[in-house]
Image (cartoon, rainbow, N blue to C red; front, side, top):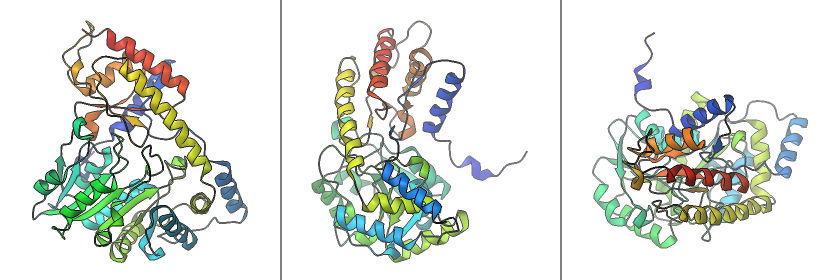
Length: 396
């Protein structure tokens, strides 16, 4: 069969691939502990579920406006004003079937063939692939554990050319857990002020899962706001991954462009999810805050467990629910049967011998690291890291 060459432009997400391998082992009766998972292990809060049930009873079961119901877009504007001191109008908001679609819309709306998109490493696996789909050129800027996996103003300045169209980053970051402070964002903003042709996509999906204080958005700088596209959603902060609802905030022109693209791909997002999201965004945040308290406890314990294992230097995550240790000290080691040559070998070794799933750092643009999630129960975290410690002790 002759399939489209389009399929050759991008790769399958490694995160989904590792989940698939884990499921295959479970199907064989093997107890696999999932530390690759990228979603909260909590159920959606009851008051949000109740709002969805009410929406079903009230027959909100028809097609929705492409950009989302007006009450949802108003609720998103309320959230931005309340949480971020940012003023948007409903015309600036486009709701989509998950933040991944929001990212795709924005990239396709902005990037032409051959235009450059700067992405600091490590980055979420889909960023680079969406740029490739748009026929843009990915320009990776390597950060390091020593720099807390944050790009510096000097690195940003050096990476900008006359072909640069877009800068794409996340804070809090998946996979590193880095969070940019207001001071750090201001320093980057000073660079962007010198290059008015560069747009900025700020992925803020992990906004509420922040361990170091109030969330800071680069859109807070008024002279840059029209060049910033904020991407956010309900998945992480409200434990609503399966509800598939994300959104952007952008200037009118970009928002209309994203709406036009979405109108041909999916049209409006799920009606029931939208009604539930209005309640999530405008009412009681305590369930979300309680979830973050539990993530805080797990983060503390995971860092203690990692420190017990030699050769795993690790940045203390400031947000999200991952740790991203450097595993390169194990490259070249073997248990007599398996030899670890790279991060992919390291992850596969843990999956096949310790039966613990993780995600190799190559997927995130950082080949020396591996991502481990702590979006799992404390019991499974303890069990998983005990298995990892035992498996790594066999490598010589």
